[in-house]
Length: 357
Image (cartoon, rainbow, N blue to C red):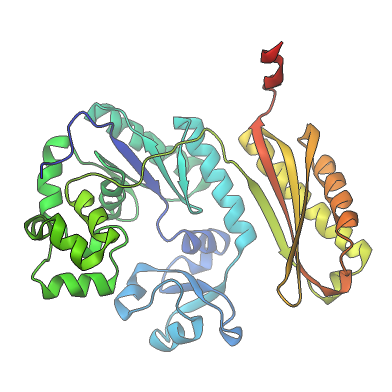
């Protein structure tokens, strides 16, 4: 199998590494050094959502219980996850990147894929502009990788470190692939890695020697995906957009916030945050959904179209109040409330229906 054709459009991958750690350190400068864990309350079985890279050597990873992580790393400091701040920082990051390069495909709160220029110098220049822009506007460190395939772009960025730029040229792509360890390929977990190592397959060169039929026999459909990756082809296509398709904010309710007046205050706060997000991305919303979660974890959703589209906190709050009344929920049983904006369009764009006349 040959390497990916050199005519393929290069893909860029930009990411703030250890995003939750970066958010926590920006909010609390005293956390700037030393091992750090970000996650839920260890006394309530909270999970790790972010950690400094030095803790990974101890076997700590995202999703592990914070209590267990603190046992493994007793010298580490723990801070509670601040999702509100993380979402706001993510929004600033997304807006900054989109202003520079337009359409992107988001990946989580802090990573983006994009179509990169074909010329190496131009691609590197764009990546360096992104790093400088994000640093100036958010204070966050960005790393960028550019490669002939999206999965390779993320690996190239990972090899940069916490901040910087690297470009993998089409000419160097084949050698990069052949030496790539199997455990670094997307969706290859510990079990698959162990199984391949038992067969003597350590890298992509070994996968190619094993062949497609053997891989499919051993791993089923996952074997075909691995075969494509081994040839430099990404099974997942790049889908870039000029703006997000949805925006959402939610809050957990406590005992003092279950009365009607308190719920009104929660809706007002959520609406204000959503207005900020709309303004930051230059959008309006054509649809809204209210999501209510009760103490027994049951979820109730009500939605409606918005005309004219919502652009302000007042618009959003008014629509959310109507949906709350329509839901007829027992306020005393509510434990979480969320507002989701959909049908997002660039603010000021003409009504598309005018094209029909």
